[in-house]
Image 1 (cartoon, rainbow, N blue to C red):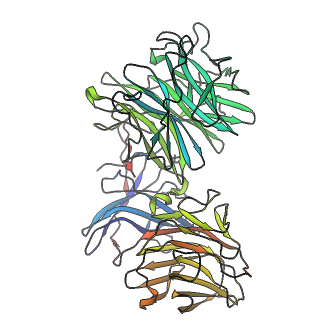
Image 2 (spheres, helix red, strand yellow; image 1 turned 60 degrees about the vertical axis):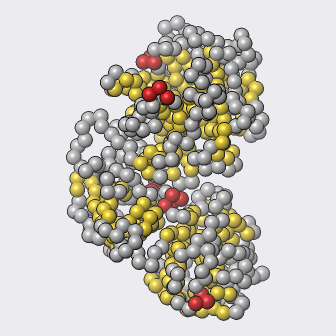
Image 3 (cartoon, rainbow, N blue to C red; image 1 turned 120 degrees about the vertical axis):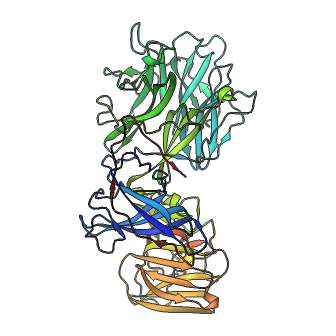
Length: 631
């Protein structure tokens, strides 16, 4: 049985249903840090990290990662209890086995363990005869508003690189710019009239900037140029001083090759450019990674510690650096070349440093992106570009597969969980823990609800959000702090509804009256409702609605408080998930929400089977690694 690389321990469990399989189903699991955790479904024998950051769940093959989200961690170590939601791709009528992994001390932000996406490749070559019908390699991505701008190397087999642009709202479906290439070869006789590629693009204020490499022919040294734009599409070269950076003198490590990495850092007024360099343009085994700094993007000073990263072990070179700072640590994702049975195979590794311009240490988990036989990325994994999409890290990379005479270079991606497995956006049909600072596009809003410090605040009458998507028989769950108000006309709303008012079908209404919390469920607030007192009001609590075809169950902090079967309280319509403050002029908020999600629900939930005993991993053969698939 395959084992998830890097993890020391795992336990197995089987799930089953008496009839009818379910897909993309979310199940709650209470995971104990140790056997002393109260209420646990399974424990980790004190081998899990105290923040549960190294939990992972896989399908029966032991390596296909499942999406999950840690809702909360309660109690004190060593007896902590984690409430975890796991999305299972499919649960059948027979026993379906899954694995829970734990015991990996090197988990960091972002993870060194990426799951290759089934969506890949997401950006492919153009139609035969077009300028990019052979090679499409994303080199940098910039997000402006809700749009991602991907700048890529494009070429035909008979020409060299030029710069293309593709845009997307989700990072998966991309549309190429109609005016591509957006940066073509330089004018005849210019320093970049033979090649103009490797675009590193970002925006400051109203100006877009691009660093790119170029050369006048196939033998001259490759340098780095600068271009600017007002819209990210039409570019003007800085021809006064281009190229703005070239290789060192004769005999230097970067004499013939200088190319910008895939990201640039700016700290205070200084730019930090990590770049690839080589003493030979064609001899890739000379290529290494260095650092240069500038305050104006025109004049660059190379670090006295260059090269900062060189090949070691099975690596034949290192190149294409993408550097990002996480806390006090700088992480460099880079491409390296290996020799597999006489073939040049590229992979992606990770190195880290606390000092930025020295002491880079390569990860023991390298490669973090390996090759997969007989797939689109069987030969190359190149040009790493890391972005954050909601609550996941997404690492784009480009590759050449085993396509024989039809070999083409395309771009795909892999995902990694962020700290604490906060991948809820993937785990549920609707999810938000309000950490973005602005209402996501999956919500419609009424009034001006605000997000700050991972809290949604509704502090005015009728202020609220509702999901753009609608749901019928689902689970609604949220952690909410309703204000305690002595006002019999006061109503806060949490549940399913398509409108920002109280006149249409509602699944739940909550009203604190005189310090007590009353739960109200109704078909139409103006004509009828059913209610139950839930006792004294006290702070943030977890509210849950389970809506079936013939009943609705209401839970407060995991306790069932109402089972409703009255026909007029069970609408058959598909409704939005909604959170809305009281529709009164004397609103006395704030009404705050930590998180909310909608999960799939079936009248007969799958049942957890018995957990297997703890298994310990055997030491893997040297140099072997595997990157699993996830959605």
